Length: 242
Image (tube, rainbow, N blue to C red; front, side, top):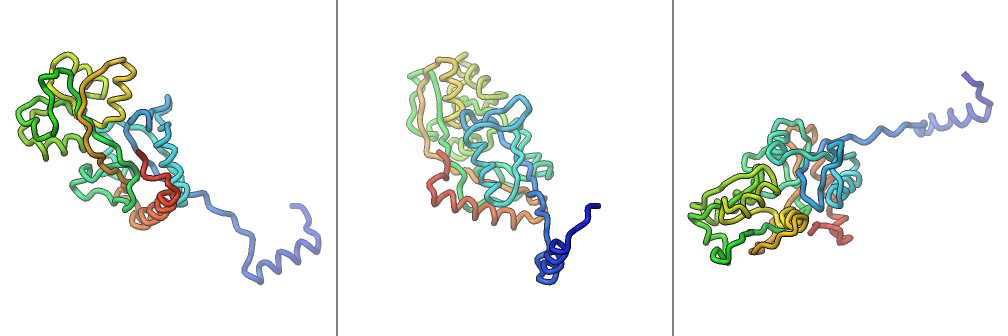
């Protein structure tokens, strides 16, 4: 152990007497955040971590709240069950997503993505979801918000499910359903990639929020800190994402 000079010992003694002894800051708590692919805002890297502007904003919110966010991409059908069990600490979701009180919601909205209705046949032109009763509508598996909205507006519509956006578009273009209902951004991104043009009804945005599993210790305090961080970003015009 190296010897300390008299000056060093005097400084250390003074610091202790004044209650200012040297301290080592603890690393910020890491929270596991699960999201679904939502291109172009969220895409999955090769190792499963989330990339894209929305994923970066999630990390920024949690960092500003004093946490480290480990943001990874999961299949949409798994995220809700993982939040329920506590295997994920947080996610991003709409009010339709949690009907069982499994999570605490931020007061501030994270985003306001739009849901779109897509179809190919001009004979199927509609101006509202209420006109879909009796029609066959594709909703990708695990997309709780579009499915809940459809059941609310057109309770007699027939829902067919696909594994993902690409499968949903294939079902629509192959004539296996009349319509596709899902988040506008990811569907349009896939349509652009495929070079496809379809007809579309744009619907009002559905707000999404940061949700924290009730199984997380200090979940209430975490949500309060996240809300404080989000309010600062709202004041800067950075939230909600569109």
